[in-house]
Length: 587
Image (cartoon, rainbow, N blue to C red; front, top):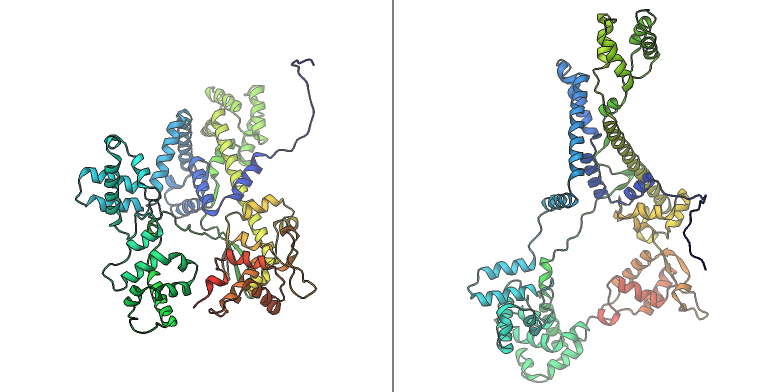
């Protein structure tokens, strides 16, 4: 087989996304506040963009200050725009010459300066308490090392040996037994700090550290934690009662010194102890966790006005932008008015001008714009003696406009083109979100009127087909977008609810279990509506005799005519963090 390099031509057609389409897709996917940040960055980087509010203020000031011609004249406005443009151009050149590392460092510094103040972390809280303790330098160093090993929940997940192995310096030469004793003392110091229970190595130790040793219930709570914490988690209260009755010491604390204790009375005492344990915090460091619930900014509002639902796009967070007209005028070449054209046309036929000069004047009289080459000819004409005073003033005015070279014109055109594309992309984004929200309103109108039980199954493909757009466009448009409705604030993805799987009825009248999840037939209701019905049934059950999953299946069939599989009930119950019937039972 011969291997050789050769040139060849091939004619083919390809479909590629233009830069405008890529920008539209990028802005469509941005959440509201991210889009706001993007617009503010473009306002700083693009001199031809301005906020409409600034334009209105300037025009209002001009209307009020008509008495001061030097402030409201067109020449002053153009001069200020030109100066601003030159500053932006010089700044842009400096940025391009700056190294990438310096620019990245500047951005990082700006980001750090704009960060909101964060709350104190758990480690910082422990360090502040350690700073006021009177301990020697070595103990302080070991305590700091222990603090570094405390996780966000307040626990120490590693052993003393592992902490000792990560120590450096002079500690490596110490005997292991002595070093472990010093670390154990440092751990005890950390465990004495706030919040109570911090520095524990297990859930048992965490709860024991939070007990008040001077309390009357301390011995009972200690026995409960040390011997029956797993039984409490599994709701095995009868087992705890039997263990307490068999322990004379516990019975003495409970004042059952004569006769056979009543199991029901002991059960009530166990409930009281468990209630006291409920006041303890199994995750003492969670209070200082840096995780915060992000704020939600609805981008769309659905309001009911006179019995009809209206869609309102919330644009209050986005600065309205437009192209600065002064920069448009700077790119637009000077053109004579009708009166000036008539005057130039009258003198162009006079014999005192050469043929080339007559051609220039006749072209200007017909409305030709002043081009850079024409300016050179007008300059030569002004140097001669052929023009009279009025003609010389007119030609001088034509040359008063600032002449922009090619690089300046290209810079302005590129910035204005980028600004127009940004404005177009924002408007298309608004239109797409409005159309999708309107389609959601058509499909889910019963939800807005009746509630969660009437939320219908809806697929993104259905909306895409109805609007004639691609499925990925719908996915981008609803990503991290929120809508404010009379029923509350929901993400747009909430309305694209999947249908609830159900089981077909078996000949005996009981629901048959489907063989595989993919073979489950779909019900008319959504999974969210089914979950709400399951929650309502569980909320109304007898706590001393809770319903099993099979009994919930039966009640769904009787009350709502819904055939659901038992495993579906178990799956949705776990998603709602509802324990099984054994754990829900109250003794």
